[in-house]
Image (tube, rainbow, N blue to C red; front, side, top):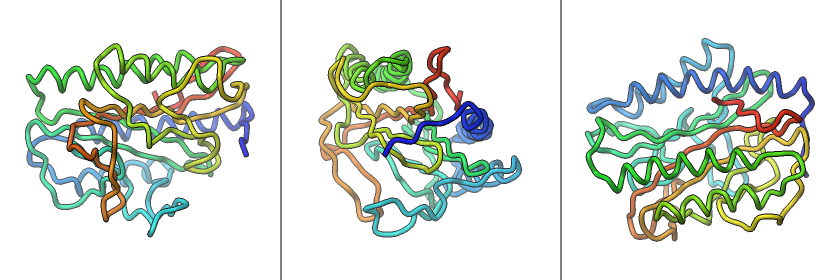
Length: 253
């Protein structure tokens, strides 16, 4: 069931999103060659707690998972798309690192993700992947208007991906968010304009394009992470967005 948010809810979510945004920027800046993923995880947790929030992912047990998630941060490298668990791995120059984070602030949940190239790269295909995935998110956000349709969002992602020579990972999706880390509706990264539920004021969703340079088929790993079946590199960007009378409001900017 979809749970719309009041103006008061959205203001609290904006506070949650501010904590998340500042934390994600610090983690991304710290993701340099030689840094361990476990360090980034601790950095995220410490920053969230100092700001008065809680890590939304830590010990979160989503439906269908075999066990609770053991960290505050999801760190996914290369062909790993999402849900990579931070541990003792030391980052290397050229790693394509997806950083996904959730914040619980006074029972109001936000979700956001970014992709960084550790140490930078001259690889034009990787640069196209990163910029194309970010562009897909930006275009999807523009579709978040009252009276629009959920399919407009997926069509924006899919259309951007096609223009940039990329492919959406179709088996994974965004979702509603706000009172829980994951709520209805599912927000797919493909679709047809003019289809799906009508977008209403107070709907808050996490839009998260996950695009690949290769084939979109995926495989679930024993640790609960997801990888591309052909080991192609992926990128992932995400924002929590509220649909308001003034247009889309990005709560995790």
